[in-house]
Length: 143
Image 1 (cartoon, rainbow, N blue to C red):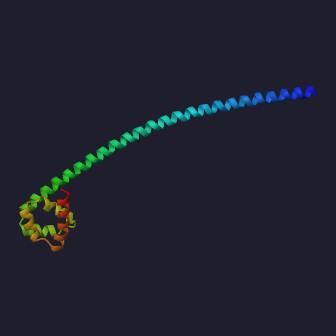
Image 2 (spheres, helix red, strand yellow):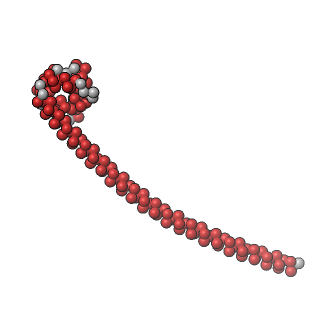
Image 3 (cartoon, one colour):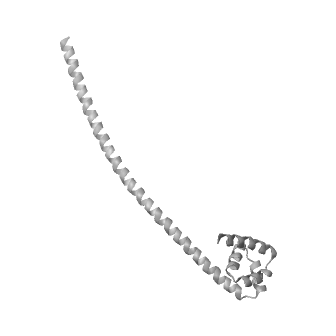
């Protein structure tokens, strides 16, 4: 019985040592995976930081471009306003009536000399004058 017990104890110790070696291998694999995950996580954080920085740069660029577009539009409307001021009021009113977008007509009138704008409006279609007036009111309230 002692012999059987001793051999069972020996077998179980050998089996335990084999299990321990397997567990140690698994632990090493897990530690290696943990390191790889930490490395990838750190790289991903760096990439994310670069993305955030690029996002800010693009947002700043977008704002600058929008500002430049507004400045160009202002210059364009001022030039058009000068052109309309030099037209005969009847002709200017006729042209303003034909605009598809009353906003454009309103911006032109907004940049014109008020006396000349009033004269041109006298010859502008009544429906268009109504639309233009609403837009001009909004523009003056914004300023």
